[in-house]
Amino acid sequence: MSVPERRLADALIPLATPPTAPGWNHAAMADWLGDAPLVPAAVLVGVREGGAENIILTRRHDNLSKHAGQVAFPGGGMEPDDTDMLDTALRETEEEIGLPREAVMPLGYLDCFETISGFCITPVVARIAADAPALAPNAEEVADVFEVPLDFFLQPDNMVRNHMRYRGQRRSMVEFRHGGYRIWGATAAMLSNLLERMGVTWIPNDL
Image (cartoon, rainbow, N blue to C red):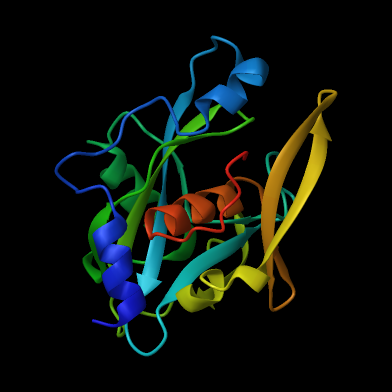
């Protein structure tokens, strides 16, 4: 196991004690979301084995009604037949990018994260077998699948700090740019939570 992968494994919430709402950013979301119930959802933060540990990301299709064209982890809302958030993440990942759950070894969780669109997301971190079958993105949902080395996110110069205005309020945010892709919004925030749990000290504390 490489140094980044050891740091990753040590940083996660154990599978036996999955995180629960509210999300780590609940205070920041409260002004926008109020008391409205949030939709449970899960994403898969998949780290491919072998060589550089690469995190698997997608770019959502431009014709989707929500978050069109944005970079995201594979995942989505919990369905009635899902047994738990882990099951949701594995099912959604297989549906979106064709990665069979047999090729996924769950490692643990990040903290729950709340989104402006009304979801409470549970990020599941997992190891992806180096010899996993070739990915087959669902053309109706996913425009591209790409990978970014975990080490890229561990370099402070690769994080960009900026701000946006939403409903008249100023909101702090971070983003990463890699290979022509802009990684921002909820995905960048969840990556920031991962880095913070791995002991990175330069993560902004006002996201």
